[in-house]
Length: 120
Image 1 (spheres, rainbow, N blue to C red):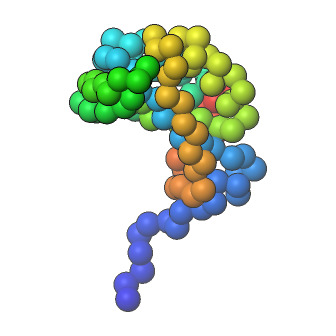
Image 2 (image 1 turned 120 degrees about the vertical axis):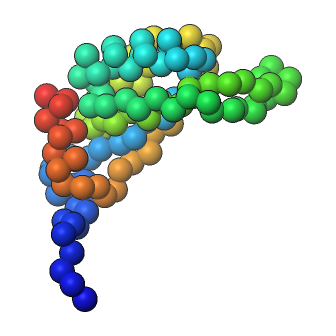
């Protein structure tokens, strides 16, 4: 088998930090842009990727609802979560915003290092 050119993925803990992917949906691209820019500028997120065209179906106040939304993928460190989550709630237009935290168990060492450096 020929040698691979790719470096193996490393545990997020090897860098001495834990990282998370935070998911939230917003009502439109303008809100996505506003939240993304504020979170990155305030160093609560290293990067926010906006995925428009999400179709959500949910129950709200006993009524079935459907909405077009933009999904935000927020890359951050666990050390920032206690400030990031309330800030999302403060900036968000929804009464009950979706905020889900997914631990990053592994990733490319270079990218995890970049996240860490971007949040300093």
